[in-house]
Image (cartoon, rainbow, N blue to C red; front, side, top):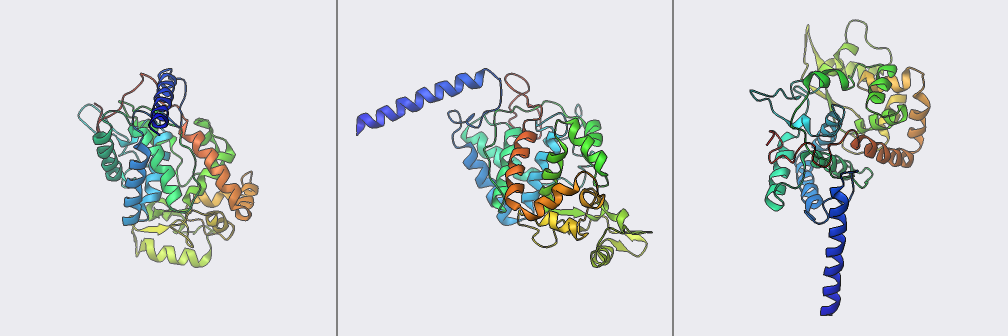
Amino acid sequence: MASAVSFYFILLLVLCLLVTAKASDAGSLKPDYYLCNCPEAEAIIFSGVQKAVAQEPRMAASLLRLHFHDCFVNGCDASVLLDDTPTLTGEKTAAPNANSLRGFEVIDSIKAELEFACPGIVSCADILAIAARDSVLLTGGPVWQVQLGRRDSRTANKALANTSIPAPTSNVPKLIQKFQNVGLTREDMVTLSGAHTIGKARCATFNARLQNQPDPTLEKLLLTSLQMLCLNGFSNNSNAVANLDLQTPIIFDNKYYKNLLSGEGILMSDQVLYSSGGSTEALVKFYTENQKAFFENFKVSMIKMGNIQPLLGKDGEIRHNCRFPN
């Protein structure tokens, strides 16, 4: 029995040496990146996400969105987490992020636990990628192996955040272009838009559809309820929020696509995927009929998005605090 245990540990040591050697070549991301230097990393992150989502179900969507908004600006490098300092302007005050992005404290808490368990090992960028996956899993969606080994940027780019992140008022050609700019396809765009099956949107992001000549693609009862929520006389209640998926707002499923067929897409950038009658309509219809295909394709597209321009090897750093460069 003792010899068997010894053999197991020798085998594990050899495996760790091989993994470390592969990691040092900085060639690509790897799902087993933390196998030897922080084997409890994913369990710590999952526990932190699970606790946050249990306290507030909406947090799952917020953590997923953090990963999206990070990757669309200079790649998946945790630049979205950086606070403003006298020498650095972060991305948190960019138009797509200000008064909108949430979950920073959850990431802070997870990072603190990881720094206690494995100081200076797990990047903030990898925390975002794993937390996004766990958020989908905890709300009933698919699970996938997250590719790991990203490092954190020392800088941010507010100007790029203002221009590269797809706006909620975008039409289909603009959406396709924004996704193509970061190496993602039209199919990836329609698939990743399905993340809006969970979460909420501020009235400020869709108020224009409700006023003057209301958007005719909005289902009439939904239009009325949104006008009551978001419009108060002649002033807008911009910070009120509405569920993106009216039927199952905290469950990751394909109801998002079914809503588009009935004119119940809250954001213009969602509803146009079907109502414009263009190149995205067929895939929307397909996903309404095949949740399994949506889940499978979502996994693939999330891995692709997570691979956008990662910092590897000696590029960047492993931040000790996700809000500030070391």
